[in-house]
Image (cartoon, rainbow over all chains, first blue to last red):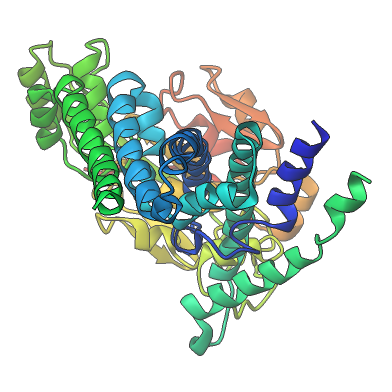
Length: 196
Length: 267
């Protein structure tokens, strides 16, 4: 249990997917303009990460490893995740229209999100067990949510400020993102300290 | 040979399997698009203003088709014409749309009140409101940058002497400006109501009087004058109940600050 908590906390704070591993930067910059869409996107990411891990992990262990095809993991995972997200979208549209509407365009957008692919590949690299892999996926998703929520607040403040013309738009956003990323460096070692 | 064949079979197999599942799923789980919903959506103006209380024209159209207790006359910009069209499409009884319009609940023009700062930031009400609490001496004053003017699709709002002024004849009551105003000074009221309180200050009487020559000082004279129990002072601010007000004008006569006004259009 303690081990799972360590995985969860370290992925949210220390090894934050967006701010320390620089995965999923595209939605981080693209969808963080408004708080509600940022939260919607993050929830969709958490959901898909969990689902993708749940499906790709057995495929790797039971299909690829016995045949010595570990080198195929990237392409197989992309294929599986893309198909999976499409399937989930169809099912949600039919059976849970409310959830489908609130996830909206974000669900198809993350079919090829590198954060989702990254979490499944890292699970294999780290040699996690199935449960650990699932917790890892949730942690990565929560870290993504945290980064998105924080950054959407930062962006709102940037937008209503008087910044030099040269920095308007993307430059100011990128600088803010880098500062946020640097501030997360402060968390390194925190998790080890908590669970000592 | 085998070392090439197995990977190909596995990857192709997964691909074909996924494709097959998706094809089957999209066949069996296809969601029928309601034809009536498309027609209703076309009948609506497409302003996506949200005056009907739904998230947009699409949402309102979907709700109308799925639930026949939803009234067809909620679209304020479309008015009775759109209500009639929708009623015909859905085969429900027609009800005339109640006209609505927006009014600004602030009268703090330049001769009545002052700005407390010379704001050099981005010239918009939203930006100014985030800086301390806006540039007006009164925290509930019109900030005068005209966010509402920009938001209005019908050209009904103009800035006159530092305060937004809404042309009742052009206003369709879409409530876009209501959401634009960071001080929440704009209210949507039924067309029948022509008497209104032109102030939103909830400071006490003494403070309001000090910072603005024409604010509600909560003297309650209007309450006494009203014969229909339609106007009440709560939180140091008079408010008119649109259901009870008969626009008789008694409160207008007794108001010492002159903030209760009538915007009846003289014929």
